[in-house]
Length: 596
Image 1 (cartoon, rainbow, N blue to C red):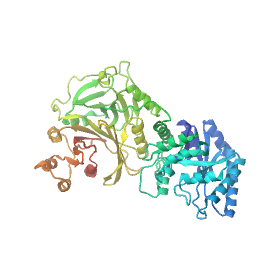
Image 2 (tube, rainbow, N blue to C red; image 1 turned 135 degrees about the horizontal axis):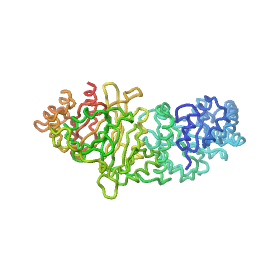
Image 3 (spheres, rainbow, N blue to C red; image 1 turned 135 degrees about the vertical axis):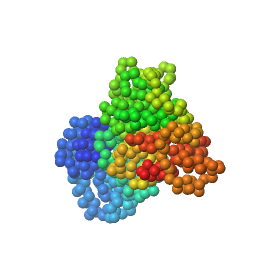
């Protein structure tokens, strides 16, 4: 289906918004009245600019407080509408959005509303314009789509139909199945937005917290299916009021928006892009640093050994169990020193994963590669982290480890043979404030991971927001974090969590090898004693070693942290039973300790 986006969903001037929409691949736009009023361009110049960019102007919006008002006021409304219809003719738009009235002068009289909307539609028809009537969720007397349809049906004019808005319908808990009873040719427009579930006044919820489909909790795909079954064949259009999107760069927001519609059409069964290829594990985590001396002692203390070096690049491979860390000293990309810059994902079908990414506007990154190097595709996440699609050691697939030659000797021969690390449990990536929802959608749609509920974590200087995404087996877990405001430090630490089957033994080994672990306040253990019952000596061991503890109905979680080096720290974790979380209750303690 054709795709469209309301200019109110993007930041910048009207010309910047049009350019961003066109570059992202949209077919059309809704022109928001304020964008036109504030533009120095004439309606004709806006129409020509859109046409030059290959965009149609699918909707002009909004007209407010039109219907069910006293006759004198309606006469004034018709004069206002006549002016707007002339403007639309100059603009090249043929559909206008009319919102259900919130005016205190509006009366609860469906027959009056239908009669006045019929007169409005007759005036619109003279200018070649259609009227799409939308029920605002906070409308004074008309607040549901089925009520709006009853009024439109009673008005019985060919230039009058309904506009269905997923937020207004789903935020009120209305059943979208009833949409199928509306004739498709009377559904003039379909506006789409998602939103997180919130206990909030619906107007404030709508104006500030809408997001693109797939980023929230509403069943937008189910609504689209109902509209299509009813016979709707117009554009799928995004109308998203969001404080973050209004401040973010329009180009990448438009790409994020187009990606959301691609995922939505797939979810609704309208398209069949390359299927998701869910990763099965971590192949490696890559750390960029100009000076390996800052990190190699810690890796050695954590039981890693330098096993190989890339044949053509300044990249070393460190291993322990199935956990692999790459140290990359190529700083030509101006990456922050000592930061997690790339993640390798074990993927059942790397080529199919790349095709999936391309179809969702995440093109494969260009790479400098020698002819003998294994072909290894990567895509960039919104925060710049590169994700590689790997098939380590699998017959019939290129193996990236073949590009590495055995290291002649370990740089730290005194390093322990290992402390019991088995694999990478999860990685935590700090997101730029404007890109958190975009990152969630990327990890869901491009990487095929399932997003979990968002949680707020208490930092001494404000709340941090975190949301994890994982595969069903829990062998790939990625925690996304963001600060509470745009001014929050964008260089907050990232971390790599390493799994072990015996955390106490692993911590003792790491400490003996010189690892500096994050000290935990004694008050934490006093509180822990009040919350849980432990075996004799167990809590004392945790206190001695700086181990944090959590449990739920499924199992237990033990974990501890190293001190931060550059932007990076490590976490050692032990999961027992079916524990599936990340120790969120302990995050405020960790954050306070890191601040200290």
